[in-house]
Structures are given as structure tokens and as C-alpha cells.
Length: 292
Image 1 (cartoon, one colour):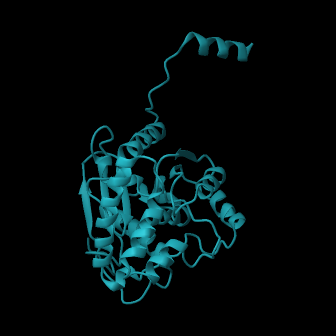
Image 2: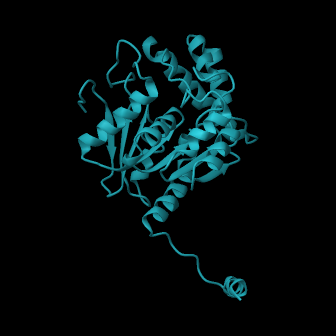
Image 3: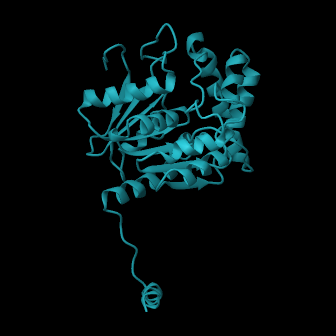
């Protein structure tokens, strides 16, 4: 799609009434969020390749306003071209950071934010870069270090079959990473909300978010800590959080169906069409007692 100063590559899935936008450096077409277009959700999904990557425009210099703000503006401009005044935004990892910046800067555009392993990082180590991103950049031509970093991102598992499948996935990811152009591997978006220098300052920023937020977090994630997810869940007014103890940073490709189930419940609740719980004698009695 041609924008005012850039071209953004995108893929479109489904044709439902619910418009869902997502942006990131790249997407797996068989994983989340593309699978939100299939039943039982059946949403109209657009995955946008972020400026600087792949078939989207590559600026000569990093954006003066910072990558995350630029990418957030790009998503809103993309929605303008669609004629979508409001939309659901969902993002994984750095794509989640884009959504948090939309929520803070352009809340009127969001029907909801669904953050998948993408809550703003802890402030330890400064805000110019996450430790993992910095390590990937510094060792971008070392397959051993890149593979080790991917293992950290996946997190630990005690399942031998899952461990073997992950090693195959890691081998493919390392090959893809090493094939990226140098200018792409050097992009460092930094941590969301870099002006918040401490965890307390970050919590204060999050308390100012005024859109419905669903946080889907993986407790074995080697990038976004459980503390980061819990900070956002405690700070964002009205937020809902689902924490998967047995998942890591690549839950979007390993277990997309688990994410889709939670998204469906959340969006149905927003739309006022969530299925009511069946009444039981026990719950009726408890209600009567409480009112007596």
C-alpha cells in the first residue's frame, strides 16, 4: 500500500466485520494473527510489514521520532487508507510495542489492544535496547550466538518432542536471520516508552492507557519477563491478562489456537455477545444469600 512517504507491504485474510490490524518485521501466514481470520473468530485481518523490513520501504536513516512511534503512525495511516476509523490492534513482541504506542498516542483509533508477549520491557539495562536485541545486533553474523538467543526466547520445556521440534525451528530461524540484509539486522527499536526510565515511571505511563487491553503472556518467555506482564496487568485500568505457564516467546507460532480462544472470548465480551454462564442451583443459592 502506498502511503505519503513510504510503501507498506501487507497481507489480507478473511472478510469478516471485525477489522484487526497487526504490524511486525515479518509474519508466518499459518500462525497468529493470520489465523484470526478463520472460524471460530472469522475476523478481517491485515498483517502489515513494518517500514524498514522486507517488501516495505527502507528509510536511509532511522526515523527522527523513533521506530515505535513511526510504526504506530504507519498503522494509523494504513487504517486511514482502509477507511477504518477504529480497529482492533494485535501485536506480538516488538509488534506489541507498536500497539502500546498507538494506545498511548492515538487511543481514539483503537477498539482494543491485544498484546501478545509484548508488554513493555522492564527498565533494567536502560531503554535504548533490550539485552536480547543488543546481543543479536552485536553478533548478527554468528550462527551459534543467534541460535542460543533463539533458545532463550523459546524458553525451557521438559517435553522431548517439543524440544526436538524447537531445534528444527531454531535452525530455520537462524538461516532466515543470517539471510537478512545488513540494514534490517541493524534496526533497534529500543524499549517501548523510552522516556520512562524506571519501572515505577513505566507503571505510571501504563496507568494512563485508556483503551480495552488484553494481555497474553508466556511465563517461560526469555524476552518479556513475567514481571513485565504483571506490571501491565496491574497498571492498565480494566486490563485482562491470561498467563500461560508452559509457553515461551514463540507462542504465536507454537500454539496460535490457545491465543485465538482467548481473543474470541475477549472480543465477544467487548461486543456484548459473550455466552452467559449456565445457571446452577449452587450459584443461585449463593446469589440469594448475598442479597439477603
